[in-house]
Amino acid sequence: MDLIENYKQELQLIRKPWTRVWVGAFVLLLLLLPWFAPEYIIYTSTLIFIYAVGVQGQNLLIGYTGQISFGQAGFLAIGAFTFGHLSRFGIPWPIGLLGAGLAAGLFGILVGFPSLRLKGPYLAIATLGFGIAVYQIFANSELLSGGRMGLVIQKLEPIFGLSRLNFNYYFYFLIALVFTLATYNIISSYVGRAFIAIRDNDIAAEVIGVNLTRYKLLAFAVSSFYTGIQGGLYGLLLGYLEPNMFTFMESITLFVAVIIGGLASVEGSIMGAAFVILVPQFFSEFKEMVPVVFGVTILLVLIFEPLGLYGRWFKMRLYFRNWPLR
Image (cartoon, rainbow, N blue to C red; front, side, top):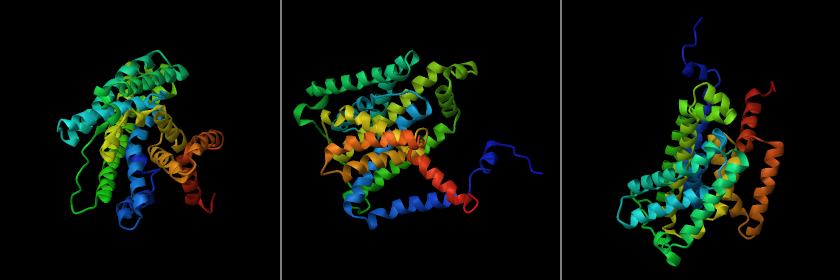
């Protein structure tokens, strides 16, 4: 009898070969999408890729570590305007994006300190205050935000003979793919298991040797880094930044994406990003309905499907995998 010797062999018991097939088919579909889809679908998909980065960061904080934050709009603004100022000084975009992520991550560590003492709604209120404070600072400082004219950012020039629309699509798809793989690696590592232990029971986690201070601050730093990168990518795509792009509603949008997509799920983060981008598109003529749809959907998810869109997708896959022996 063959013995199971490592974790990789254990995973083979629950992973099916068809999983790789449908994942590969989905990636292939995304690669071919710009060649047959209308332009508005390509542009919408590009926005989903950008938001998927930030939503994954938010999910690492809320879904995996259990730390509620309503200050993501502040980290978005810090990352975006850091990238904007660096680009104006002629800094290459890869260094600018890294600087945007690091700047947001640094502030994430500072905001994370209250998480060592506060929990639940008290932590949420503290982070909410941070997001509002950052917005007010940028809105009232022409030096930081460029004033009423905002900041103009030089867009990337297409290469390989691609149109600007298709080039942006592949560029942001590649970055989203890199961050998705990075997220999978984080949650499957010791760091990810420490995050989950803190979420489930921080006292028990500390008893078994998890350093609460280190990993709570690390969770805020990583989440803020992702969000700062999202802000930089957003500015690079639009070529323009101004403070009103980073109001409290941006924090709500990311929070809604995490809850509806599915807590503690990378796939759910991507689904949630798609949801918060597509709903405003469907209700473009009735924008006042968007918050209503978000609120009603959250209620339905919390009542009928706590695992979100990914939970429903997982149950559908399980149903057809076991059919007809269901």
